[in-house]
Amino acid sequence: MVQFVLGFVFAMVVFLPVVYVGQRRRRRRARRRSETQGRQIEELSKLTGGLAHEIKNPLSTIKINLQLIGEDAVSDRAENQRWFRKIEVVRKETDRLEHILDDFLRFIGKPELKLGAVDVNEVVGEMIDFYSPQAHAHNVALRQGLAENRLLCRVDSGMIKQVVLNLFINAQQAMPDGGELIVRTDAQDTDAVIEISDTGPGIEPQKLDKIFDAYYTTRPGGSGLGLPTARKIIEAHAGSIDANSQPGKGTSFTIRLPLEA
Image: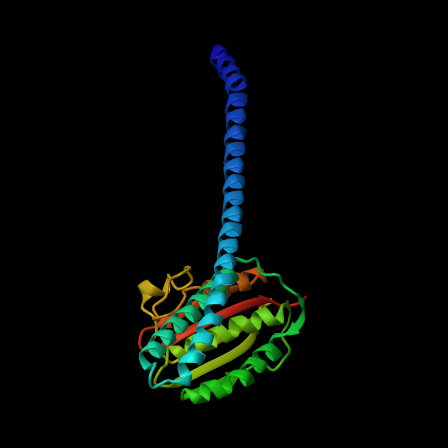
């Protein structure tokens, strides 16, 4: 028995350091792989961002020249009707390409937040006032239920407005025949909560899981970067954004932002 115990102790003394050293080496290798992947992703973002900027420069030149050609064509539009139509097609496509590039640059860029103590109620209220004419023009009734108390958060108000506006536009586009856009704010635990809902057709469960994926879109002409960019902005504020939907009943997005202590 004594020999067994001594043998066991000896084995532990010999092998435990080996196991410990092996674990440390594996952790170091994993950390190096993670750091390498992080650098590669950062370099790729810089390269793609630079490429997008390089594409935008000649694109601007193309747009200017299209405008000049279009002005010449308009001077004798009846004679140049066929050319005018072709110019309009190219112009619209260059506008679309420029929009895609702008969305891409916003998505890959790190949000540079200008933080300040902001009442979320005021931010949302301003966006409701701003978007009301657009909603009315598309037969969308905009209803609101804002919290009675101030919801002070340390946020970049411009960035939060960008997210809210994007959700308003998505809701309106989901209701081409009109409907209701409902906006609510509240305080829950340590968070300010913004809820934006529509009465559109809703999103099927298998598609709902993908809506925050880059370049996933169900809308013709959509870039598929609006919601991923919105999530990136909200998470940069240490917040969260989630979606719930019922086919045939509509979709609701819930934003949570930390309240000021």
